[in-house]
Amino acid sequence: MDIIQRTEAILKTLEGSELCTRQAGQVRQLVERMQRLEMTLAVIGQFKRGKTSLVNRILEDDVLPVGIVPITAAVTRIRYQEGRTSRSARVWFQNGLCEEVDAGDLHKYISEQENRDNERGVAEVELCTDSEFLKDGLVLVDTPGVGSVHENNSRSAYDFARESDGVIFMLSVDSPINQIEIDFLKNTRRFAGKFYFVVNKIDIIDEEELQEYLDYCNALICSIMEIEPGSEEAGAIRLIPVSAKRDRGIDQLKEMIRQDLVHSSRTIMEDSASHKLQEILKDTRRQISDYREVLKMAPNVFHRRFQDMHEELQKWEKKCEGLPEHAPDGSTKTYLRADLNEEKARLSEKVKQLFGIEYVYEVNRTEAGQILSRDEYAAELTNTCRELEKTMDTIFMYKEENAYTVARRIEDLNILLHTLDRYMLQ
Ligand SMILES: Nc1nc2c(ncn2[C@@H]2O[C@H](COP(=O)(O)OP(=O)(O)O)[C@@H](O)[C@H]2O)c(=O)[nH]1
Ligand SMILES: [Mg+2]
Image (cartoon, rainbow, N blue to C red; front, side, top):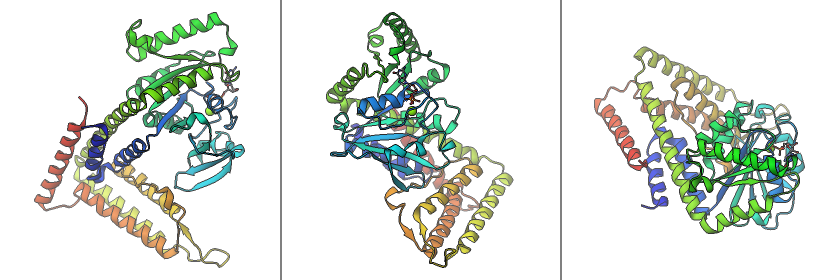
């Protein structure tokens, strides 16, 4: 079975269970990326290593904001578009909406100072350029710092390492590799296809000091990656010294990446897809085990949770009834599908709080801007609440008295686990 068939088979299995909606979504994205033959290369590392500066140098355009203070609070995805010379970017919000903004204004959305704790709800920024380097389907991703004081940032760096086919891991000669970076590398080495270790800021030291720093990095990376020092594998670790500020070493880095893309893009992609599937399968097992824990809950606690859920959803339905038909100026009030997405995210949050499992709704970006009348909006939200209650009843077999139904669900779950095990690499 090749990787595409395996991925599709896993997708089918995950789609068959209400418990795995998030993971099914991840696999669906993986399939799409493989079909588009798109390779994602994420630049990851601690704050101020010079990640954004490097991205600008690679693109040969100072398009992204760089700073002495932590600047990047959201992920920026850069892809090729023919003839795209305008410096406009798309900001995607978590509710699925999108805004076209001038690249010069990006700092308002992606800097920690102007978008503290991501209060604007930015999901990511998309920038299209006609940079030759990205022409063959390479998507470059600038990420926030690993291990920042802002938890939500470090989470997205991890998420992006998970999503990427390759990682440019950014080090800089002005500080040693710290524990946060070590932990990050230990956790991510399993699922990124290819690592490039870029050592930045070489303009501030001399040749001799640089060699010392590179040797130190090589030894440390070997130990983190569990590679025998001096072995062939250790020799294959690429440490690429650059200065993003003085534009040194950038061409060598680009050439290296280009060579890999030309010669082994398929292998890199298949390798990384295989790693990712494995991670998704593990995550699914975790979700199922969380679910089983809930089933073991004492009946009175279990009952209380369902009561809370019921009361909560009743409140939501009441809110729907009270939604205004007119805006303050007397005109007919309209609603957006994006608002509905936000409500659904809140419902997911509630499920997580009450039952400790993830139940996510997929956000459809193309429909987020759809305008709904008050009645349509209220009807859809009410319906979502009712469906959710029914689904929770089914999933947890709440008040289910029919022994056959219970047996069937347990049997289905066992089959699901068994199937997932079959797809896990040993
Ligand atoms: N000396 C020197 N400074 C650099 C270099 N690259 C970036 N910087 C500086 O390091 C700081 C952080 O850069 P930035 O790209 O925002 O880092 P990021 O947080 O990793 O994205 C800025 O003040 C940059 O000017 C370099 O190659 N040499
Ligand atoms: Mg940055």
